[in-house]
Amino acid sequence: MDNLNYLFAAYTVIWVAVFGYVFFLHLKHRRLQRQIELLEAEKDKQQTN
Amino acid sequence: MKDYVKIIAIVWKDIISEIRSKEIGGSVLVFCLLVVVIFNFAFQSDEAAIGLVAPGILWVSFTFAGVLGLNHIFAAEKENSCLEGLMLCPVERHVIYWGKLIGSLIFMLVVEAIITPIFLALYNLPILLPGLALIIVLATLGFVSVGTLFSAMAANTRAREIMLPVLFLPIVIPVIIAAVKATGLILDGEPWGELWTWLQIIIAFDVIFLVISALVFEFVIEE
Amino acid sequence: MRYNALFGLGLALMVVALYLVFIYAPTEKTMGDTQRIFYFHVAIAWVAFLAFFVVFVCSILYLWKRAIKWDIIARSSAGLGVLFTTLVLITGPIWARPAWGVWWTWDPRLTATLVLWFTYIAYLLVRSYAVEESRGARFAAVLGIVAFVNVPIVYLSIHLWQTHHPPELVSDLGTSMLVTLLVSIAAFTVLYILLLVRSISLVKMEMQIKRLAQEDARLNPRKE
Image (cartoon, one colour):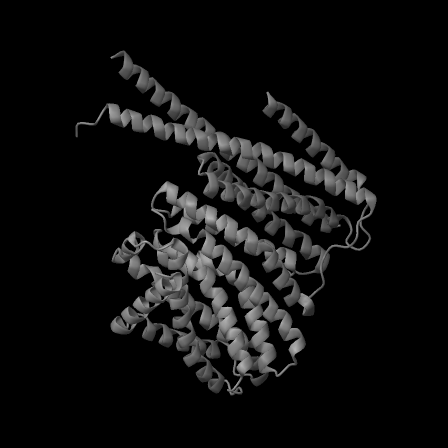
C-alpha cells in the first residue's frame, strides 16, 4: 500500500525536525559554553594582573 | 482640559498637516484605483466571475491602500520627533491612541468614499447601497483599531514599511473575510439574515480590539 | 536532577505513544493506515497552541511586572511554537493528500493554524527588527496578547466562511483511539517542556555572555 509512504513521510518529517532542533540547541549550547569559559578566563586573568 | 478636547486637537492637527502637505492622500487614492483596475485584468473578463470576485477586489484594494495610509500615521511623527513632543504634553497615552485612530479613520473613510462609487461603476454594480456604507465603516474601524497600534509599533522598528503589513495583515484576516462576505451578500441583494452574522463578527472584532489596543497602546510608545 | 527525571518520563511516554499509534490503535475504516498520522499531527497542534498560550500569559506578566524572566519564557516558547506549528502545517497536507485527495483544504483548523504561523513569525520578526532589545520585548509582548485574543475570532470567521466548502475533518473517536491521542499529547507536552527549559537556559547563557563582555569592555577599554 503506497499510502504507507505518506505515513512514513509524515513521521520522518516530525523526527527529523525534532532531532534537528535538539541538535541545533546542542550546538548552540556548546558554542555559548565555550564563549563563557573564554570570557571568564579573560576576567580571571585581568583580576590576577 | 477634557479628554475629548485633546482628542479633537490631535485629530485636527493631523487633518491640517495632511491638507497642507498633501503628502499621502492623493497617492493612496491613485494606488487604490490602480489596484482595482489591475485586478480587473487579473481576472478574465467573464461577467459571472467578476460578480463573484468583485467584493474581494474591493477589499483587497482597501487593505493595501490601508497599509499605505497606516504606515503614514506615525512615520511623520517619528521622523520629526513629534511623538516625543506629543508625549511630553500632559495627555494620557490612550488619548493619543484615540486621536490618531479617529484621524486615520477619517482619512480612510474619505478614500473609500471616493473609490467605492468608482468601483461600483467600473463593475456595473448598483451604486446606492446604504448597507454597503455600513459594512465599510465598521470594517474600516476594525482595520484602524489594530492598524494604529501596529503603526506605532512599526514606526519604532527597522524595516518599518514591511513590518506593518507583516504585523497587521494576519490579525485583520477575520475582518477581511467578514467584509468580503458581507459585501458579496449586499451586492447580490440578499436578505438580512446571513448578513447580520457577518456584521456581528465585524462589530465584535471592533469592540474587542478597540478596547485592547487602547489599553496596550501605552506600552508601545513609551520610551 | 529534575530535568533528567523529566527527560526519562518524556522518553518513556514517547515510546509508549509510538507503540499505541502503530500497534495498538485500530486501523481506521475509511482512511486506512495513513490515518495514524492524525495522532501526532493533533498532538503537535495541541502543543503549538499551548506554546502560544504560554506566550500570551507571559506577555501579560511581562508588561505588568516587567521582570525579564517572563520575556525569556515568552520568546523561548514562541520559537518552539514556530517549530511545532510548521510541523502541523507540513503533516497536515501529508495526511490530507491520501485521505481526501487534496494537499490543502481551507478548513477552519488548518487555516487558523496558518494564520497562527504568520503571527508567530511576526512575533519573532518584531523582536529581531527592533531597535533595542527592551523595545523588541515590549512590542512582542503586545503582539503576543493581541494575536492570542484574535485566535477564536479567526477560527469563528473561517468556520462561518466554510459552510460551502468541504466539511470538517475529524470524526468521533473510539476509546482506544482516544487513549492513543491522549498519550501522544502527553508525550509532546513533555517534549515541549524539555525543549522550553533548554531554550530558556540558552537565553540565560546569552545574557550572561553579554554581561561578561560588557564588564570586560568596561574594565579594559581598547586602545585603538
